[in-house]
Image (cartoon, rainbow, N blue to C red; front, side):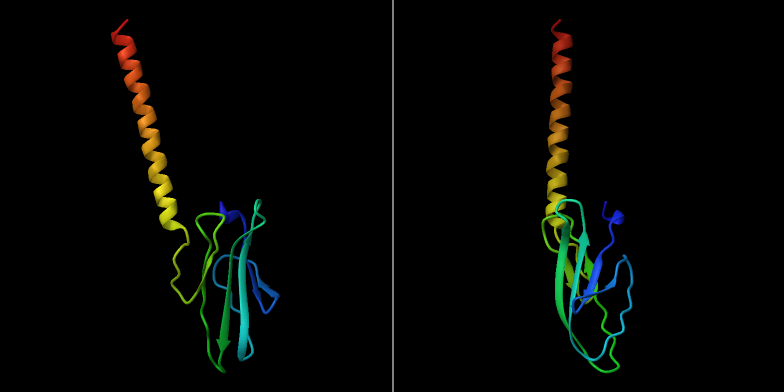
Length: 119
């Protein structure tokens, strides 16, 4: 779903990028504030992440951003590789949903079998 929305990348309050993938931003040496979020439907902004970065002369700083797996938590921003926030909760919710579906289907099958044999 997030492929439909492109992240907003800001450095020192100025928008410098709006795409998934690698973005190269030339910066003067010094301290900079990096902010990334993904515009969304509801809420209108998800996965907000902020990081203070110090750039030394001639240095390249590589950062990795990961949008969250669950809409209501923040994103991850820092040196690569970053993990997807909310991955464990997403897996647990998927397993719980699958178990509930299997129980529900099993209940319908048992009810159908006992109803047809009692007839």
